Length: 132
Image (tube, rainbow, N blue to C red; front, side, top):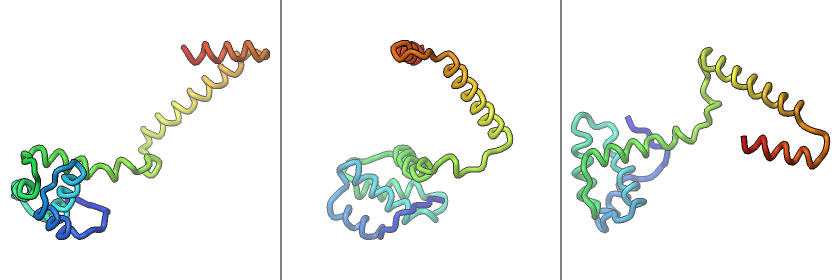
């Protein structure tokens, strides 16, 4: 099932592209998004029907595979924007995160203890550590 968070009338979008075919990538994405909303509850023939309707409203004809790939990219965008901190980590993942944090702290302490007191020596030290 496709979930699209944006609120828009897919019929307006479809009628716009029936009058003037979708030519740009942005237009194709709008058309595809409207078709996903319109056909999201369709069964087995969803992709075939979507391909037919897309090609009827687009200047450039696309294959069923292209439409599936483009639709999957549209569907994953909202998920990609979510912060990873919102998800609860498993024990194994949490242990890994804790281990990495401890390693980072130990590395920071080691660098701080090796830091020279002189300003020019500090600058050289930081430059060499950054390069390494």
